[in-house]
Length: 219
Image (cartoon, rainbow, N blue to C red; front, side, top):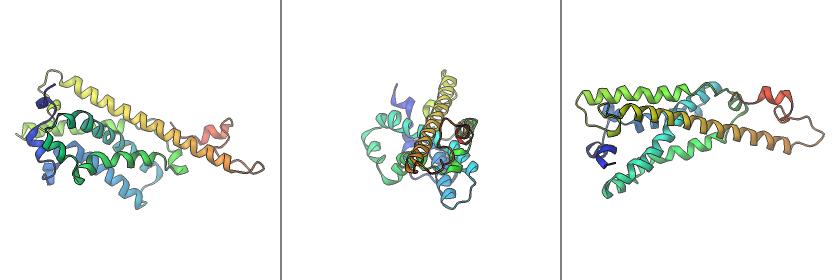
């Protein structure tokens, strides 16, 4: 696959200088804005547990997928001067910093967050990613510089690419869902071990009891 199919040199050069609505043509900016809102609202304690989990499930999978596509697909195809540009602090903040923060968030679950159901939330990240596609097409129709050449609707295999990317979003969602499940179970097991033999088991510690089933996350 040629470099021209993967990325657009003019668009890549405007990545940091783009401001206002022009910056919205980059899906990375969408994801970075969503992740920033998630951590800002979480730090300010402005969300209930269900709302926090829903927002996490909406922005985390596309953000992880965007970082993977950038470093595994786009970055190797860039010329050397743009590869050096990718290691600037502002670029790393958008393309890399969110990954360890989101993964770490999976291991820092409160009981209310762990109990919030996530199995039916896979549609939210798909809608978040799918909403970008018509925005990108409208940008191209208005004469804007192509941002991601592989998202051009005129390509003969555009439909397969779009469907494949949305499928990867769903896969990222389920990977994070399993990570959260594992983190919750480890935390529950640690709580059980730390209690004395004569003490009452914490809710959710006895994995064989009906209480464990009821208090487990709704995954």
